[in-house]
Structure formats: structure tokens, C-alpha cells
Image (cartoon, rainbow, N blue to C red):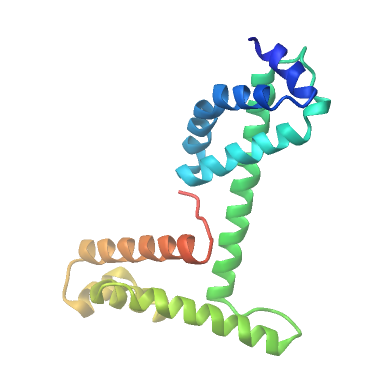
Length: 184
């Protein structure tokens, strides 16, 4: 069947037509989403969101218009929203972790501050000893990589490697346990 025939059936509530369209487009939509999101789980979430929207709006679909074009537009807009959300979330966490929360409710501020401090400590303590030391010297004490290299008696390149690995592990931990996603 052609897409327009399946869309006509879908408009009338056909679950078989919905399944056929889903099966027809799922691989390419996951591939497109994964290209931008760099994560299979997120790409699959996008796919499910898109087809949920298709099902919810099935009665308003126009079989005369390109269904694949409609799907690609939905995919593009959903990916852009996801990327904006991830950027906003990462910025929020960075602000929480690096600055004080500006609010009139001091009790609430203290609780949030303590929660993020505990989370950051858990993450830092999970680093290897060298990564932990480099991270603390760089991000807590504010030393340059050159100063850290001199203090630790290692090369600047080794400091760079430890810093990079530490930040990757912190990002991974935040993604996994705090549901925070970073743009790669």
C-alpha cells in the first residue's frame, strides 16, 4: 500500500495502518535522530514521541500531502526541542553547581545547594585518584593545567588527559543518575 492509502486508513483509526507506517519509517527516523542526538535511547524516545503525535493527530492528517515529509518535519522539530531542553538543563545544573542559587527562600536554597554538593562529591569521589586531584586543583582551587603539572610533577599533556577523563565521567554520571544530557 502507498502512504496515502495507509494515512486514509489511519484517519479512521486503523491500528494495522499505524503499525505499517511505524514499521516503514522507524529505522530511518531512528538513524536521523541518532545522527543529531548521538544516543540510541534518545533516538528511540524521539521515534515514540513522533508516532504518539501521529496517532493523536491522525484525524487531522491529509492523505494528499507527503506523509514522509510530515514525519521528517515532526522529527526535526522534536530533535530541536530535545537539544534546547538538554542545553537548558545542562546550563541549569552548571549554574547550580558553580554558583549560589539566587532566591528569597533560604531554606529551599540550602537544600538544593546541599543536594548538588552531595551529588558533585559522589561524582568526584568516583574518579581515579589522579583525575580527582586534577579536577579539584583545576575546578576548586582554580589552578591552570601548567600549575597542576608542576605541582603533581607530571606533564601538561597528562594533566589534560586526566581533566578530560574526569569531565567525561562527570557528564556520564549526570546523564545516567541526574537525567541530564549534554550536547556532544
